[in-house]
Length: 296
Image 1 (cartoon, one colour):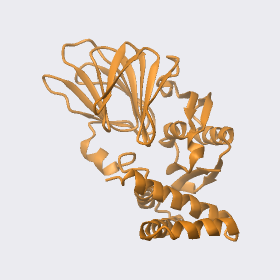
Image 2: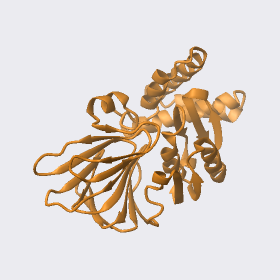
Image 3: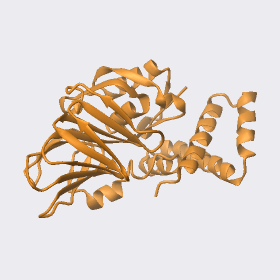
């Protein structure tokens, strides 16, 4: 299970300090920051110790070329969340998967779906309801009109409709719902939103929900091997690229909240990652098959 928000924040802070000290181990200000962090008590000390263990494992894994277990360990420790990358759960539950390229499918309910690269979907439908869960990645649904309700779950966010076309995306710590045409009802707990054509909603684990407008050609643009963002946060945009890159992409600090805009060709995801990072003033550190780190 993912840690609490406080635990995740503690690991984020420990990891950022550790990475900064890798670049400048003699920097007195950074050493003081680390000592102040460790002085906060046993929880901070344990977080920093585990980060040191993870990166020691990363270096060892680079020598042995066995990166996957380290990526999973890093995700759990740094608060990325098991739900964001959980191959065991996907393997057990997913009825429909996409490999390293988008996949078009006709569901048993006669609705159409498109899954982005490395996305997975579980079909939980019965005679009374068409129900699906996005286990990983992004899915676009073109829903036919039926009496049976059509419901999609992404984490604790639920989307309900009878007939429309819309996208749902699991973007790290965010859930995105966007409507190409028609309308949907989105709920999380006792909160309910209605989205019409060209509207999108970001529901984040940290921070308030955000409703924005999108051009319809921006919605699920990955179906045409494109990424079109207009004021999206760097962290959310990078999450779209993540499944097309080796390893895992981690964004440290507030730089992930900066906004980026542009249209990009997803056939060269690393080039797109570097352009987005440059736009936001972030540095990209490549870890080979383990992935990338973005930070100031």
